[in-house]
Image 1: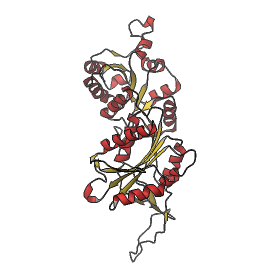
Image 2 (image 1 turned 90 degrees about the horizontal axis):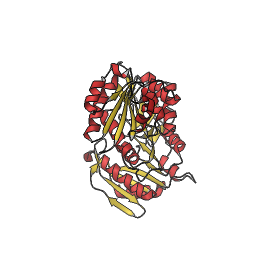
Image 3 (image 1 turned 180 degrees about the horizontal axis):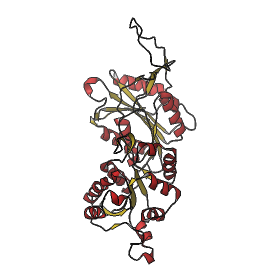
Length: 398
């Protein structure tokens, strides 16, 4: 990012101290950083600290800008290649969404004509509140990128979504925003990831093994190439990649509905490990053991076939539909059969036998199955597989 510049707006939250590490990462990549600190942010991190790591003056007061008579705040708002708000509090997101400009930071954001990236951080209840969700949705509709928040323990001792994305995650999102437009700019890609959970009763469920690592990596790689990515994810223990629109689901039926709602799309990648069956009549109350210990009789019915359903759609069918085949034997035979049965364009097949370490691991060894034949890819990290697949998708869509 040599030669690029970032205007970093730090608002008042406990996570404000992470701005120092973010500035270090940016400066290490030869990116110029200028910081704007809100009054509340100054209670958590000092202007002197940010000035020391950024090697630039830190601005705090709308009326302290030199040459304010020449509209210094306007110049400041347009002097950088990218505006980043990290952390972005619920209050500041509300200001942004409603066009309020009552201090230097909010005035700069309202006056800018440059891209904006926000990294929310707040209490879980504040993040989940309908008002905050509506504000974030409004900002995204205006083209403002959102990274995070992550899930986990917070300073208020509550657990859930609301933690500021880690500095390296925000740094990656900034890198993506500052790079030249990728080959998938203007394209919309739908990606599914993770398992589905099909309830047996309120505490038990049927599921496939899946960490979601490969699907999430694919979503991130597509976003890095400029695509607008809708990620429909089952339950996973990892944050979404930067720059994707995340839709969380639990069951196969919910995943299908979310996928259909996301259309139209130029391409769809179905990497989720969807449970093939569900219990016909899930119990409303926890099933109890009988005196003789006999297991309950569970009647299973097929789940909707998401890949086949989308592949068979009419005018709204994506131009490119990619399915996944996780097999433990006769991989090539099963993958080619799945390509024919499902009606999709490509199948990404992999051997998930326990000895491979692929399921839940960091690496993958895939075979790309198309009507033209089978390509055998070497064993790579899941990020490398995702990058290679994303480039192949870009080639197919251009």
